[in-house]
Length: 394
Image (cartoon, rainbow, N blue to C red; front, side, top):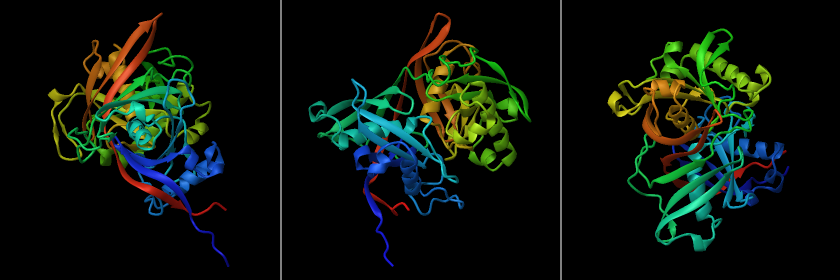
């Protein structure tokens, strides 16, 4: 009996922000996986090690959390005035499903370094020492991200003293600009798809909750933590080990997705696990982060806790950070109110791992709020590169 050898596929394992994932160049994938479809999804599931009923990803590259079960495909730009296309797949842990419905803001920080290191940026544009600007087309949602990547001696600088809560070691700072980050096409033409800054959201089994629903960065449903009996300072165990709380938060996500027009029936929510996000907001309070660091109320504007793929995120998703900054800049939203109200172009919020500062520029045109730009700092580095190996299909 003969046995087919494993496939060897060039790949790079990278950390970007508080996430990590397996990066591929499109042309390095097996031919059948170079186009969207079942072959591509099956390959990425096997790379990550999903579906895994044990929830460990022992037989794959995944880390068995929403932050570490990710794949990225990079290709030459398909859109003028951009350098590369960036396609992101959120791989489910316990089901055979890859969600392509949104972006990963954290891994966005690794796209520029990957593109430079893999020769996808014209060498004449890469300074010997300085900042290389990479224009990225985010293919999942059709938006532009501009990455400002530090370069030393003609190569991407990965080491540095920039500290990011949720990441153990310091690294070089990468500034990201998310241009026109409102996903208005998916949400019916408005950053606030219901037309309201605050809605009464009817959630089966829970009741009516005040909610701000926004599509900046990633579709997000914001609710007051106190309305669900939370303080807004919770760490992962307090929510992730509470099956009743998880069920309530999923019910809110489904109700929000329906109200935002992202799905047509509740049953569709299972095929759109990555979006929308649900986030709990609360006024600034003292708390101890997951590392034991004291976070003083005076050092932050508000507290936010966000759900990702059915679990409380250990820090904060980059795309949700864009949503937080944008909603905070619009007077009257739940996020703005939790931050103290008024007008602001930046916000510093507390999350389970610490704090994060992010800015957004908004304006009101013909009665409609629009966000033109959101900015945040992240870091990224290569963890390993070479070949990922997977059994052949069939």
